[in-house]
Length: 477
Image (tube, rainbow, N blue to C red; front, side, top):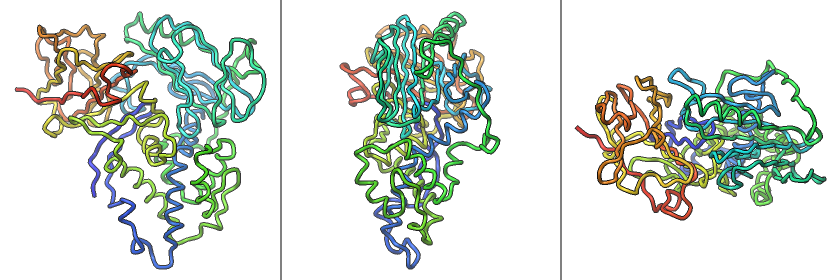
């Protein structure tokens, strides 16, 4: 089967997920799918183990690339350093697909295996922000921010698995299930010079230090650059090109300091048959088989097949999205899918990212045509944080336009119609001076849309429980 070219951008580092795959439903595989003499059960155990470990291996490869610098520069910084993005990208930006023009990232990778790290957050003065903390398995184990902890000054000690000790007064403990932690903070910003200055001042007050340096003058040491690390190839491609033996060897090593959860015990018991045991080196002698070279490809294809078969991936009125992100339990396939297409995804209570590539009649968007999305009175996106609609070209980058406008939201001083409804105009040419406040400029050719919903309403109609539906985009004359 061919999986339609679709994208789910779930936060963090978002990736296109279009691919062509063979028929991969597990039920389609039988004895005939393997060469004579191959062990069908070991084949399935090996592909299941690959899928299980995909988030941990991807997080490690991401960490290596993002921290392999001597000092903070752009989106990268050494371990334990805070990376502060200072402005939104423009149409020339090509580092990450589906960039956003709503929040400025404040991020860091750090290791809590030797001692805890202390994160100090300044008074955010009522501003919307969130600081999701991901463990090595991509679970958002804590997410301080306006929704959960308010906007006053806050101090947290992030401790490693099994840590015991005494923390300073006023410091709240957050226990990470793994040694590796990825802080992937976001701070709302309107993008005006005045608001940039205010957010920059807040970013500069964030502090991240080892517990032993808390309350003292501390400068994080410079990073050490490893020339053997591939800094050019996309992380996902680096992971996918590992042989099965390389992959499982790395996975076993990572599990020593990033232990699986208790709920994973049944799966791990199965994986022991192919030499993958938590806390031990990978025993490659237990997985010598003719099918070894095919495990990475088939396992990754099973991951991407979730676009078609996983009921958690919704497609409503031309908008594709999922609300199962951030916490996955034992749904290893969904966890791997989100890792592959949207590493760093928030919990749905914090953000949902519906994406649309076709209009109400399932026709691809064409900037030479005019489109409108109509929100009836009282039916604009129900969020307690904010919402925005972003325009991308066919490669999921911003579109150069005379307004330098890449997203549209209530901060543009939108004009509502007399009946209280709201219409946004999606087209290449201006809809007229009287409508430009509601105009999101499109390229002359193909384009895609993304609706960002930060802090979906919890009590009123919400996209999470399905009581609010995104309207379809309609072509107009």
